[in-house]
Image (tube, rainbow over all chains, first blue to last red; front, side):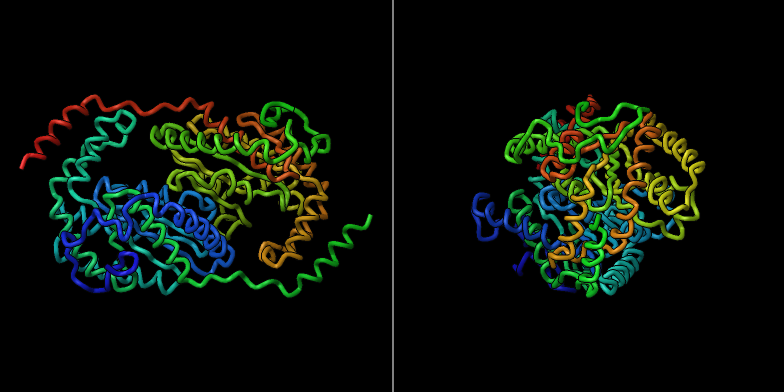
Length: 273
Length: 273
């Protein structure tokens, strides 16, 4: 497995060959806790630099089957950052207005401005996943959409927005356990959505369509397949991916205004009684 | 001083009578640290309930003179919350499009949806503050705007959005020290905005216009005047205000779906080989 579970561009992927229970070189949560704390601090510092310079931005696209932990990872990795520099956007079924636009429109509307980090919880990728499973998008249309997705991601890349795509990879048994606990644990009842049970019936089809996405839409921004049956490992792996993404941007403090000293003089004048 | 530095509605306020160096009953930062940690955890839990129920929302409006710590307090109090449930919006000089709308429009556009917490760093109140100082808004127009602000806040209140308004109260000396450090400390240079020095000349006028705002715009949502010369006390006081605001909403877990058990049966059927 490549660094940070990153996939090679344009290569065929077989999801069943990737172990969702993988924990990298670790056995226990305790082994990563110390480094995770350090990484979180680094992420906060990198975000401040990103926000100060306002020359680049980051878009994290988080995908995964129901119960894979998209909400959880968003909270665990990105809580702690200055809310002024981060926004998270959940993509639900499109509204009437959104339906009257192309499938990229609402994503583009919510793309980060320079200086910002945006997290997409689901994304335009749903338009080549759930829509395909339910027959609203043909194979031919899906191909066309792959092309438009690649064009959109190249537009962002050319405009200073780093796109980082993460698939939370879980096993079918893990999903079952999560669904059960949402029914059996009353404090989690509100998270239970009966339609998840319907989608579960299409598990293999979803995995197949995901494999196509990973192969066809990796030209301008790579996918990371994060083993997610162990929540602690999932959170740690995504945190690493996030920190590495920002590190790679070589963020600099903005240059100081050369006339700053002149303002000191003005301040002193204002101080005089 | 009332609980949480809350002002009485519709009462005249004299800012110079409120000590920006006030630390409540405390002397040192260490005295509040333990409680602050507990309050932060409670805020996280309350936010989850708010997000789950999707029946109410909270809008924190943060105002204050330049260097009063609007950015800092947003980071210190609200970082740690799930980014999916929080958004922060900074109001800068209006864009060309925004200028072609009424002064409430852009604020309304960014108001929280039910289930969300939104933080306004500056707000529609700037339209009766900096605009007045620079003569773009007459006294008569300001009066009209006070009325529209009250109507807007009553609309939000009637629609399940709790509006909590916070003024970060600093001394003129404190601002001077901060401005100096932004020039002298190279890591803070990028925060220095020469226009802050110009605005500083209008200090007394700003304080007077703020006093009018506190008296005239407190009908549907109270103002809190938070002494902010001590950053630790400011952060602690705003955290308390935030927690108390969410506590007062009596958030409940959403009711469980009565048909949940039937789904357990369906899961078991799906489990069969």
